[in-house]
Length: 491
Ligand SMILES: Cc1cc2nc3c(=O)[nH]c(=O)nc-3n(C[C@H](O)[C@H](O)[C@H](O)COP(=O)(O)OP(=O)(O)OC[C@H]3O[C@@H](n4cnc5c(N)ncnc54)[C@H](O)[C@@H]3O)c2cc1C
Image 1 (cartoon, rainbow, N blue to C red):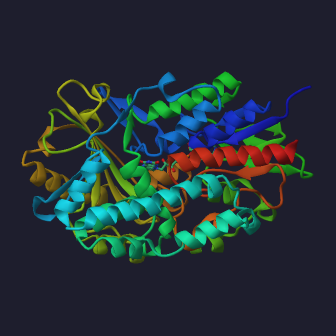
Image 2: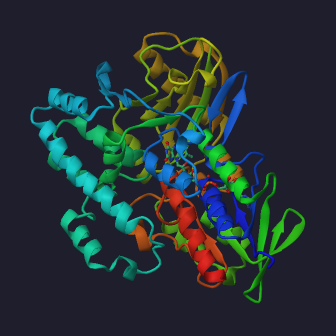
Image 3: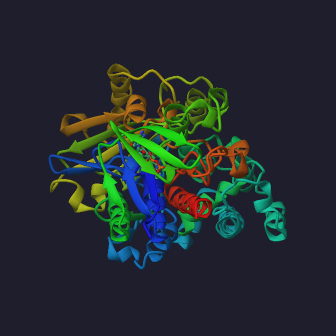
């Protein structure tokens, strides 16, 4: 029998995951990617001996990625060496105060106790609850397609949700356990960087504290792109065909059965589509209005996770005082948060994050040099130009120089920036978003954009704008959910 043909639009983690699972089920799968290289927001580029991961750098929840490999008969070490970072990361506060977050939980408790008396006990209580949330998410919630409330209507899920109060405010949960502002910032940073204000985020997401602080912060040697390479190899083993520089410009429905897919100037007749490019782009640019799930008004009311201004820097010397991950919380976050979520303007003195993978991995920079990735969260939809980018660059570099107490700007031998316009142009991202939709209460589970197209049976969506949400592990799970649904519908 001739296998049915599936097209996957986009080669990010969700597209790679969906392609692998569909191919494993016996479909003939083609992945069409508009860019020259694969991996979507996790692409990598090389310049002058520096190897830059363009997006993700925090490897959390390694067991989700391991599970994906296991489903195809592999294990993580078949592809790369996965290192647990020690320390996990560092946070820098005003007046050079800092928290160096150790990888051992016992050391973390000692750190908490040294900052606030009694807080190590509170950390135990917080983590017990966070682990329970992590466990119910992975056993009862995360693999649901989020199509109907009935998916969650079993006794165990409902009773756990009530017991753990998963919809209460994340901010209140943190405040209940910790008084010290630095400890509060440490507990709140994972939700800040991936989406919304702690006050608008359900306490369910304390599962991320459990993931980051207890299960550890990891690094795949060779860079995060090692994960893309591994997933692509798995796809190719399964028989998936990859097409780069291949922009899909139209999904044309023929009597709700065959689909004509326009890829550049060619028409491909296929049996099913996985839309893993940004959801809004697929709906508004590739589908006729009658086939869309949502209109522009719907999207304009959604709360998007921030966009980002990123600098990829090659530095001709080693820099002291920076860890692999260093978070600069040395200015007032409430002002920056208003600039992102309320006023939607360029921040004046933002928090930012510095990743220096060359602290762990010699292969990402020339000898004696440092590879830096600086990320500043910004509102989506902002005007973006060189002078705005440069204005912030000068400010953050001065803050890094002050902190490390050494000149930096005169040692930068490579520099490239990436911001709102690049997210829009390179990924067709709505408003130039970096991480999709914010994890707010009214954008969780069944309240996220639906993974199925309600009008076309053989079209499903996947990726960070639908279930389960933004981040590498959720995107991989999203691809699996989409593959299963499409398989059920087509077969
Ligand atoms: C700067 C940054 C830092 C991040 N840091 C972390 C982190 O540390 N840890 C973590 O877990 N997560 C992180 N994330 C989030 C994570 O990277 C994303 O959630 C995930 O990669 C999204 O995958 P995706 O498949 O949904 O989308 P994408 O990776 O965007 O893939 C979609 C693909 O579709 C392609 N496409 C678009 N339109 C078309 C078209 N018409 N035709 C063909 N192809 C098309 C795009 O080019 C793109 O390759 C980060 C994201 C960013 C941007």
